[in-house]
Length: 231
Image 1 (cartoon, rainbow, N blue to C red):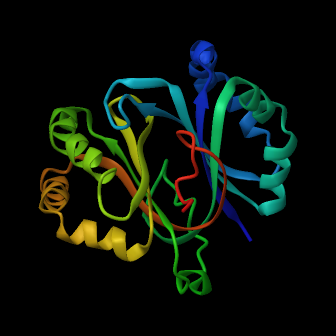
Image 2: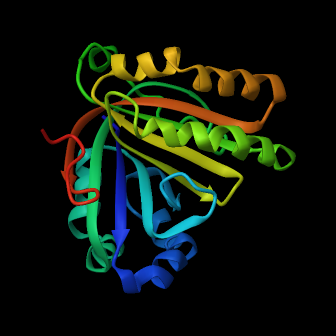
């Protein structure tokens, strides 16, 4: 059974240059990892959701052939060992897709969910990702960035962050919620969120977009000194 993971990596203060370089140089080693079906090394935004980059924090999202392939990478791959040596903390969530639609680089990498998983209750992670049309970027950042930042304070949110493949034009938001109900309450009741959804469709902001919801199977490590789902 395939498996998805998301890792949030916080670099040591003196590792900013190395971390930024990995956005390019790590692609070769990652493409040769056995059992790695899909992967994205992602930068993060200043202040969590800003357009400017945070050079201390990165995300790594991956889809594996199975749990054994994921564990082999995290336990012993030389690239991951370098990250472990150059970070102050790493938080990794092991995920099972509940729902996904749209495309990421022309594919839906999370299209392997099972009905049995969807029936379970518990913490969920939500990914929204888009390639923004260049001419639409001013409108996107005017409306979407402020709304995305409010997610971190929404009832039921344990953690949230803005991630991206490229500054300004390829952006994603990841949020961890107590439950699917908490996430749905925010999505359906927030007037600002509903307005952004309307503008997105009306003004055709995105060249490509994806929404995915995951069951959080388990987590390892810390994010800002704690496990978001602890307590």
